[in-house]
Length: 390
Image 1 (tube, rainbow, N blue to C red):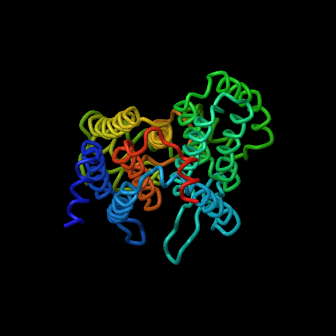
Image 2 (tube, rainbow, N blue to C red; image 1 turned 135 degrees about the vertical axis):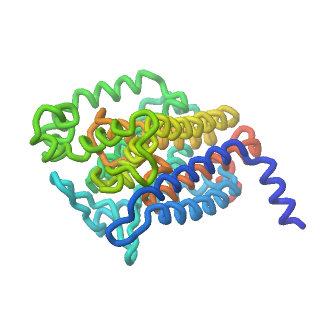
């Protein structure tokens, strides 16, 4: 009887609209991937996504049942495990190479299954950084220059580690999450201006000493794709074919399961980084708009939950997830449309990839956690709860 009462209470508190949006995205994603031809090994992409979604939903339910105030008290365990995963991957991860000089060591292999730790670390970062912000607010330190610098150091740890792994895209996502959460917390604008001025000043040095040759070429080719055939063949093939596939769908698309470019696999990584090209060719402009609309609705509902939350910890968790989804969405669409260089960023909840999809559902669970438990402590006193548990 107690179990059913708990389920009824959970169902009463949970944000049902948020669940409805998420289920709609999952259904669209699986159906879209079902139209993508199987890999040469016979692997069916939609089955991978279906399994990832089921595991992700199970994890999301478990996470949403925990009180995020209690979860924040174990930030040091989350931070330590995240750091271990990143360092372990950097040392023992298996390099993935491709044309143009790409050599990323961002995956570890468990038997025949690959796992990208940075995807899970993104979820851990939401918790640890939100806890950091909440702690500073409670002690009136959000305007302290030293504490703002320490916040930046906190964020730059995963950014630096992903760069060392050769995964620039993941580093960019961590940076965007940091910006979104810090802005939500009320960090003064002048610090953001100083940061961007410093980054702008450092860009020439980064271009000369930090970026590898293939990364420079990708940046240049993205804005000079039509200048020569050599640009297309050497560094711009994926974006050129992606742009062509999206344009070929026109308004209504060329049809599900009969679109020739999808069936011939002419766009490299069309099931993952370039899944938007499949929607563009098969479903046309209308299908692409539906994907964008679903993701925008998810983002708007995330903001709604954040606004209802009375404490910074919950707000920051929601805005961390917002920054994760929004940045991946913008970067992926811009990559597919040849507006930004290719950087290996997936389209959230739509791109094939078990690790990425499952971890994103965990992030969804964190936001539902806030929706369910945000009225448990007013205001949230993380440090006091830490002292109590001790």
